[in-house]
Image (cartoon, rainbow, N blue to C red; front, side, top):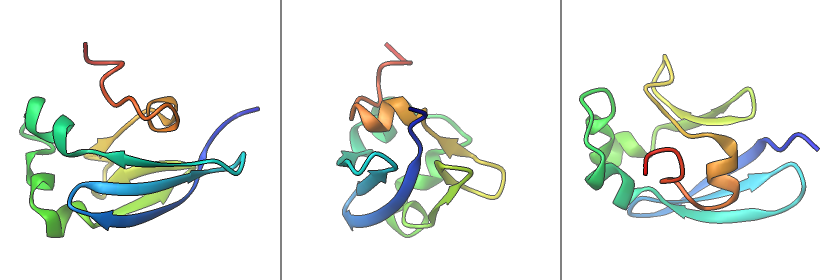
Length: 86
């Protein structure tokens, strides 16, 4: 089965509840990632008001008009944002 994001709901701070097409969901904390992996393209999403401006595009959770910040769906599904960075 090809897993993709079906819904995303802001919870608090840097936490988003991400739901998938297989009926599962995860509350993913993006805060640690944003603090430990600074990058000019997505540092602006440390601002909570901007962080809340995520959307789902083609089954992916993304920020910014040009996907300034996005994560592999498998990373969200496994609640492991660091698997491609460590």
